[in-house]
Amino acid sequence: MKLYTVENGNFKLDGGAMFGVVPKTLWSRTNPADQNNQIDIAARSLLIEDGNRLILVDTGLGNKQSEKFFSYYNQWGDYNLDDSLKKHGFHRDDITDIFLTHLHFDHCGGCIQWNKDRTGYEPAFKNAQFWTNKDHWKWATEPNAREKASFLKENLLPMQESGRLNFIEKGESRWLENSELGFDILFVDGHTDKQMLPILNYKGHKVVFMADLIATAGHIPLPYVMGYDTRPLLTLDEKNDFLNKAVSDNYILLFEHDAHNECCTLKNTEKGVRLNEIYSFDEIFNS
Image (cartoon, rainbow, N blue to C red; front, side):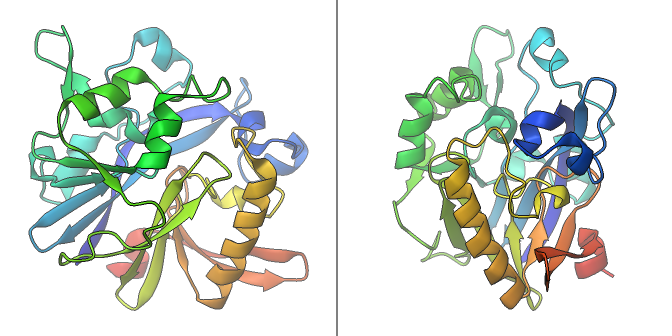
């Protein structure tokens, strides 16, 4: 098995929304805001090469939304999915499976694209199966008012219409158990219902793709919970359990949304679990 990071492009989000009740004077120390109070955000995927499977975890925002839509998120930088895949010697047609941590637009928007004459939508990966779970699919396709703007029907329904939508069974702790690859899954419900975090044993380390449980290194302290979370008190409990486990088992956290820090380890301090060391993915695994 080989792991790679894939950069789908950077964007910006409101810093206050990203840190909830935490004052700007605190969160801006790690995540400085621009003149519009927005902070830098990445759309980083994890690519897993294992045997005859090439699995992409999340796909970023994609490019099919309107100019007005993208104007809210101020995309910046030169990263894109195709160039990132090419860097590792792959093409999007090589992808066999897309594992979706959850179905907010910044995690699944890249799954679907316009067709050639822009009359409808089609999968952006012609050979890939899509993977989510039934509870989260129901949550996303029958959205609550708080998350409705994040679950876009043009991202979701074409997956189902393609005939390639697959569900991981509720409570299933491993995925692809009978294939060459079967990684652990941590289900968490604070940010959105039944978010799934991949946990992989790789080169003597346990790597966790953080998705939106801990969005950036600045979100490690326990009270630093996003305003986007639907159940913030549950996120507190989930984070507490995860952080303690991460320290005791020496996890490497791989951030999906931290534009400036790819990976980190954690340590116990008098103030609780805190950042230990920051690494690039290549520093840990390819140096």
